Image (tube, rainbow, N blue to C red):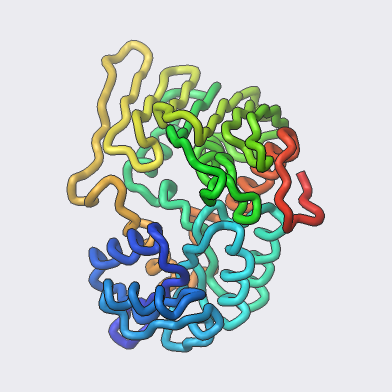
Length: 337
């Protein structure tokens, strides 16, 4: 970090999520984007011009070697997360890596081991966990507002249709509904209940052998159940709910970046809890960036909001679901489920 305390960011990849994240960094006066990299110099140059970034690299290694960068945001497709984030960690950079964190838990474990070996900060870009309203909801559940949690439900579906050439249908890019969309319902369930003790799942597969829609039932030692669903062939309500022994919390459309939720407590009128307007747009990625910068200043190796063990647990759950439904990617040689 600079003497003034500004955190200098490098952006690895130039797609839509990279653009959204970079745009949201503008809301953080102590953040500075100093470099961007792509596999194409032309793409890097165009991105740099769009956002006023000083350095543009036509390969990932040059960005990773740039010692003026405090932290790299990895925004490639998840099939490349292991390679891109690993390259940055090996070069001594701190990393914020998009989700799904990797293709599988084995790759995720390798990145965590690299971060520890090189004493670098590493965090999954699970922006839902950093959202102030989601944190408020989590606090209410932890404080017993709805009693003991019995069930969790969450779904995320897009109407499509997506042609076979689309990355969501491409096995080489880790295609399918689960890793792209299902990571949100699974992570929501994990936020509330932790890692499941048993998993049942069913899916409809495409001709390319990626999942078009997947449903899973997660069971927990406490007796709780979580029902999660994802789809790239049907637009769902994208909602979630948490039911406890004393009440329920309903999170409407867009549960991963809500503008409100409704708290139902036995014997009381429903309470609508709204997002604070000062937090900015409900779809802002700035909260996860702010958490990274807070952690770096505190010299923390990981974030308490998005702990690495939680990321590993979610990846193990995704592995197990894929194992149950028969989805395996060409690059995998020994995924454990």
